[in-house]
Image 1: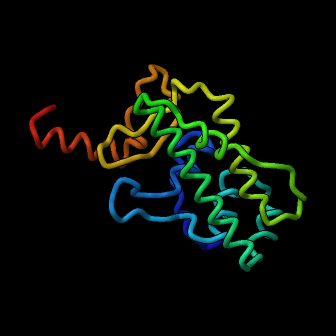
Image 2: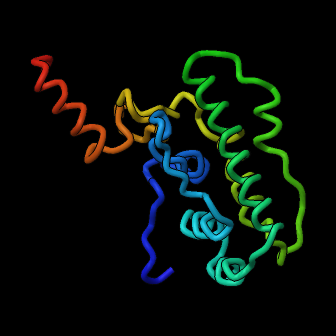
Length: 179
């Protein structure tokens, strides 16, 4: 990874939320796909601490149609989790198919190229089963769909990051005279 840029948003506070946030600029018509390749998936899983560096070094060198399929499955898994989070945020019933698709996984060989996909699925399962769902929030900016766990003392965090959305929203309010 030396010398490569880190395109991932780490404001989620949980690997599963960071995973769902890998589609950047989601509500816009020009979303940025940060899991375009298998190598991107491996990089995410390693940087998120879901797989060990030794495994990621070996997995990054893999290529071929199976790796393309695994990257596609990872993006589908991410979108299933996004559907769950969006439904919960909107106060709607979470579709059972989204929940079962988001956590379906099985045991694999330690040398399998599917390791990063399964590691992400396990992180999602942990989020859905173990996390305090009342603390999972969507960024308050109208043009941002980043999800995060609110770990603030007062449980009132509104923005994915104060440096980006928080400052931008405060500037909008100030310009409109609302603050």
